[in-house]
Image 1 (spheres, rainbow, N blue to C red):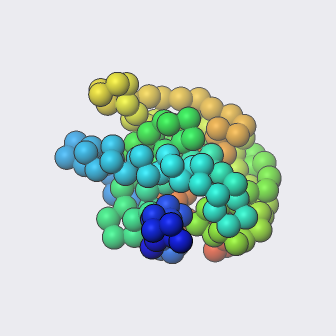
Image 2 (cartoon, one colour):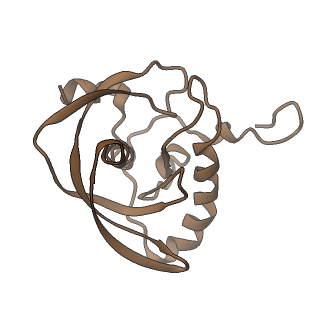
Length: 163
């Protein structure tokens, strides 16, 4: 959809919430990952509804036909095929919002304070595997985006399951 200046409104790329799991990114998907990661990165900085910016945006938020298992952070990281391997047992409840639900108010969501994630990312043009121990905000971001990859959204009952 174009805005008044005849340019595409980037936030129109968001699709409605859907229950389609993101499929594993394969080698043959990498050209698409590069191309669409630019859109996801720009969306991190696009004012959307109540939200001025996002920490990260997942591919299923812009593709409900063939969503791929990756997300992009506002630091330009491309996180491919992430899997949470371990986490603490205690949930920490904090307010979260979601760019998929542009008009919705932030709600309290329980997330693990620490987790370990195995994923792939880019080092120049090379795909490398990373195992990262994370905590705090970074752990929350990864859990939120991995939920998108698994077709879980905070506004459709997820917060009730984590209290």
